[in-house]
Length: 496
Image (cartoon, rainbow, N blue to C red; front, side):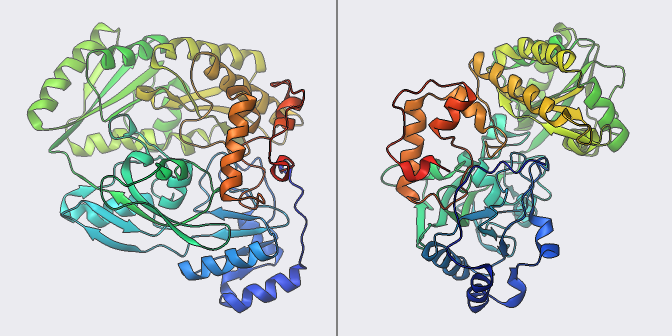
């Protein structure tokens, strides 16, 4: 069992005294400290990494969050913020000597401005619930991770989540205006503004995707979009994965920006079909799902052009969803792909690399080669339009050494993504999972700058320690960086 811990924080208060002080700040049912109550919080969606928290708190208000942060700062206790626990990089892995701060009870939609097309929401509001709440006004919230039925907006901001429609409508950062943040000392900060621009440095972009390392998100103002007049989905089947990958580039090169452009290989197709009965062609080596939306006349024109591009690109079948019900069913299969693949194997490891679209065929070929080399099957299901890969490596954690093989395999995929000009993450974050590959993507100067930002917000390294940004010492041990005198100017962060 991996804990991923590389921290040296030691408790400056006994657990009994901490619990006593927390109970003075929060109702009794908001403070969990017995092992059986803590077990549900030992990991997030990346269950290969587990660690029981010392104490878990579930505040009911922003003021209670502030009070908890002040107490933890007083005793120099680590704090790990947690949303719905659907993250896939170990970002919410607890600290054994710290407080796990769950935002689950802050789940109110505070206000909706239909004229300004914004909504103010608390961090525990589910992604899908925002769109459901404003649907009667003809509005919706665009980012739609596959876990949108469960994941929360606070976690979406912390990881800068995307989803199947991020190709056209952007990631979380492109769909929020303002964040309220409680810093490590318990002070409430307002980042951004409810207007379309704000003065000063773009701290909103800094906070979005910061993985709980700079503060605790307690409120988000999101942008809302009008529902498109028309939306249609084309399914294209291919007898060759590389042909499907090449067709993705052909669509974008034609000047067409789909709302979503997703790809699944044969293993993922059949798993999703068994699970969701979406009507996917089982004999295809790969399928593309291409959604076009907007004004009706524009969609009709683009659909015709996309169908021609797919046919000329070697598609063996091109099918247009007949109506909204058929369209929803095609997307149901794609969004169910992760749990569907989970039925094929005791465990799977979900990767999250991003590459330039032109290298899709090359990278998929390399993943297939690595699959043979490591003797582990891979199901590919991903946001093809923006080159965000999600290879799912199948394995059995009960087999000795197999988890280590999977981690090595996954590392090789991410390192190849960097080699072709891409990134080690697109939307899942770094967390614990990709921290070694950060040493591959960034040099000592860049990592030192990351530490400087962390130090500015959190001088003692109390917020989510040991995650996302590796120490230079760790990178030297990993073999990805040669250090002579290379320590950061912040030795208090260097050990975490």
